[in-house]
Every structure is written in structure tokens, then in C-alpha cells.
Image (cartoon, rainbow, N blue to C red; front, side):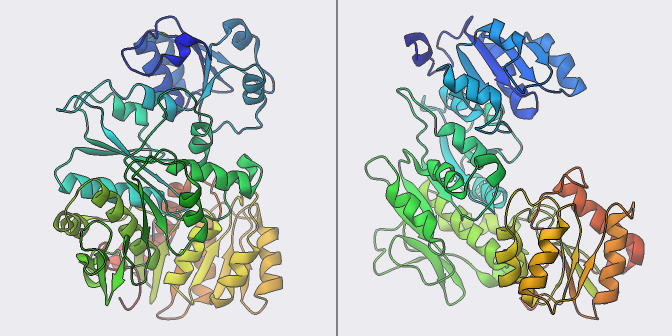
Length: 513
């Protein structure tokens, strides 16, 4: 790396005229290009396709755009002779342009590295940039990110959830109001790029967590080991607290192997009784035995399972998210009373174990955000004996273990999506007695209406129908949100809106809680 590029560690550094190629033109790519043009860099956006609005805006802000096939570096990219390439997280390591960049020895960044380098645009009252708190994991990232930000705000800090949650970190960094803490949700894709980071000022978060680890995005990373190694980057250079899941050995090993700042502590969370330096549960009370001087003999009460149930946060995997978020907030100095207050008002995102109707004697639950087997397993654990709606794009993941472990307990299964064959084969092998219905998307225009009719034929009074697909949605739907919305609409269309009048969206999602 040239001395000039190495010196780009501040918003106030000399970015003028630096030739930078931005790969991708979605939300992240636009935020990168917008930031760089504001800094005065010479920006070329390279993309296969582009949204009409971005195609109009990018030239206005001063960036050039080249669209077309990217099966090889395009002529416009070669002519640009980039000194830095910044890739949107959708570009996998094996992509031809990524391979060309690395072979050419050109510095390759993600949006997170750029955001860290320019984090001093808006400073806190003490003259320092906002602290960063990092959140990753196969499942629960968004919920934990939102919870932690809510707790920090309740504790009197200006905090913003950002990153993979939908708000680019660069937008938060450039917010003129400024923040005390950024709670940054990171995908494994973003972490892979962050793992390439070099230079004198590596990202160093206040606290970090990997919530859990299970097969996901293997088609992007190439192997489970590569996926795991990317997730482990979250702990690198952590200053105060490396938060890990006591029930997930892989996360503990990540912390043990991490290169952290001297003095950083390992903080475990789990649904069992905590040891010193842990958060956990004692007789229905969530407690902190990590962030107090007398942690070997005492604990601080955070909230209770009963209060979480009142807020619709009682599912076991959600309780785990509560503990993880609490650990991150405590690492930033938030008092237990503020955590308790924040949780009383917190509500889960739509499509996350959301009761969309109680109709026909059946409880209909939308967990469309369960886009991989690990997330679906958590849903099935919360709703044993449910009629399970699953399927979609499996993203290279083997679903057999999920069916063997949880599928046998389902009352029945309704399979949707293009990757139906691996699912039906898994049921035939591991859960052959479970009734199975396939909804072939090539035979019906209204997939979810067919799902609802199939569910009615399989469910009895008092049963739960659970949409927990364990797969991505893009084969049949615009997003997991679109999938969940259409499921809810199909239920309501079948039974009528009036049968859902008793639904309280804050009611606990776990039966009997």
C-alpha cells in the first residue's frame, strides 16, 4: 500500500483525487460513493445493473457509472486504474473482479473499513469519535442490535443501530447530529472484507458479540470453515467485552483465539445459571454477574422472564438475545434499571415469531425471518408440535440435521419453494411418519393461499401453524418480509379480519408463557 493510501485514516485526510472503484450500486454502494465524492475522491461505480434512482443520482453527486457484465474486469475499470477498490458485501471472494483486484495487489476494502477510517467526521463532546459495538451471528443479529441500541438510549447515550440492519454505517457516521455509540450489525460478508483490513488504525470496538454459529451462506464463503473464520473477525481488537454464547462452543473458541486489546474480558451469556463474568438466569430472573465488583458472590437483577413474556419476548432464543444485548449495554456502562425499562417497551420486528392471527381455532405465526436452519430450529423449539411451513432457497445448506432434530416433532409439514427435493428427501429419511404436503409454485399463482388451505386440512383446534422457512425467499418472493406479509394476508383473506380482533401484538409468542 502506498504511503498516501496508508494515511487515509481520517475524514480530514487528503482523499482528493484518489482513484477509487466502487463495486455495486445498491444501498451500500451508493453510501460508499456518496461519501467518497463528498471527500473529493475520483469515483467510478461498477455494477451489472442499477436502480433507476441511483442511476440518476450518482452522476449528480459526481460519480461515474459503468454498467454491464462483470464476468471479467470491464474496460472502464481497467482504464480507471483504481488505487482502492471498495466492494459491496454481495460480491463473494471468488467473484472475477474481486480475484482480479487481489491479484493486482490493489487494496480491497468493504464499506465497514471506509466507515471506520472516516468515523471522526462528527465528534462527541469530548472530542472523540463514537464508540462502536459489533453484533454478528447466524441468527438474532437484528433483534440484538435493536435491543442494545434501545438499552443504550435508555441509559442516556445517543446510540444508533446501523450496518446490515438496513442503515449503512457510513450514513450513521455522517449524521450531523452525531452519536455516542454505533451498534453495528455485521454480516459474514462484511466481516470477510473487514478481515482483509491492514494499516495503522484497525477497527477496535468497545464490545462485540457472535451470538451463535451454524451453516449459512456456504455458497458465498465456499465452506463452513471460511464462514466461521469470517464471523470470528468480530472479536478482533475488542477493547472491553467479548460477549459469547455459553451454549455455543464455537463462539467461546472464537474469543479464546481472538487478538484483543489487553484488558478485554470474555463475557458469557446463556439460559442457565451464570458463573462470575457471565449473564444468565436464576429462578426466572435475568442477572448480571459480570459487570460488578462483587461478581463472585453477588448478581444484579436485569429483568424477569415474566416481564419479558408481557413484552412478547419470552421465546428462548429471544431471551438469549436479551442477555447478549444486556451484556453489550453493560459494557458501555448502562445501569440495570435502564435495561429493564428499555425491555418493557421493546417489541420484536415484524416477521419474527409474530402472531398474525388467531383464526379457525389455530394460531398462525409468521417467522419468515427464519431464513436458515438454525433460526428455524429456534422457532420449532418454541412451538413444538406445530404445522411447519418451510422451504425456499437453501443457499447450499444441508437441511437434514434440522429435519432429524426438529422435524420429527412437527405435527405436519408444508413444503414450498424451488429447493423442495432436498427437504422431502430429508423427511423421507429422518421423519417419515410426519404428514407432508408440497405446494408447487409452478402449479399455483397464489402460493400462500394454497399453504393456508393445506394447513387448515392438517391442523386441529388449538394447533399452531408456523411459517419458519429455514431458507431464503428470493425464489418466489421479493424478500422475507414479502413472504411473511403474503402469508398473513392469505390467513386474513381466508378467515376475515374480524377473527383477529383478539390479537395483541405484545402478547407472548410462546404458548403457556
